[in-house]
Image (cartoon, one colour):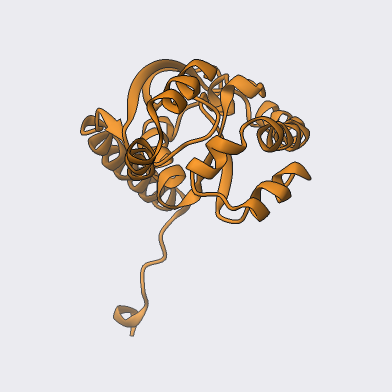
Length: 191
């Protein structure tokens, strides 16, 4: 009858198994991090010094970001309507932004992550479509920072887009075909 009873793992056995699973998970991430691309959707992947910030500090920065994001969206709607249209946003989406709200399916992305020392400044923000662009940016950076402890610093490669509105590469190609050379020069000088 005792053969029918299952062995109940001890606390030490459970902790050892948990540690083994975590080590395997981190090893998978490390393997993926070795094979990082040079660019993501036409955006260069650059190496930065990433210093992990405390979770408490990131939470504070996220709270501050709410108002910063609202002001950034209003500023884009007022000053960058051409870029927003080039990215594929409609007039009604731009009107929504003028009220400080992000259009559905779009996100204000921190170029340099808050959790790695990035700031809540307009120069660190870019409006980007969630699928697939924003998610793909995070697929590259997140696998490198998993498991970092507060204060730990390491070199991390992240996509670093230019500008304040991400225009997908396929839309950029369409735009070049339709814009006159004078408009192209004016747009290049305004950035």
